[in-house]
Image (cartoon, rainbow, N blue to C red; front, top):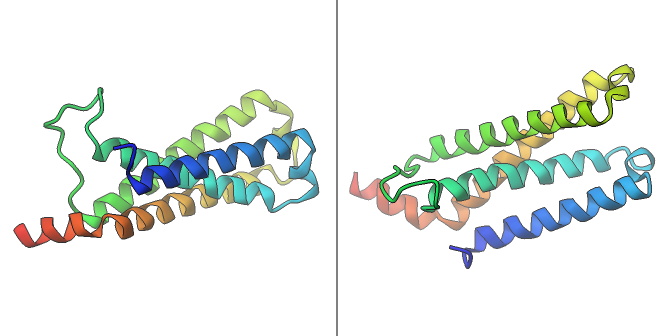
Length: 145
């Protein structure tokens, strides 16, 4: 389970987003490099959507062995996108709770929309990556149906 290539990619993306976020905040890079926020949200969306898939596809303590797995590509894509979007919404709420003054910014609405779009794009990319790495799982399931 932890040897899975997809999990390793998710771990690398999480580390990268954490480092970028740390330096972005510590050195005010988010204000100096406006597109850095988009990169962070894309990576965060990739990680969030990917972790939703990874946690659901593998039996974990909070899922029983009998939990049905995602077997359709379209359902997997929707699951990853929704996971990334919902977690992105939670992140936006967290940002407002931590920095309430950002609500006064003239571009707050535009920034929030682009953040959520990048989260969603990251989730979609995570689903595509998962499908590429696990295509043999879906071929065998489709042939047996």
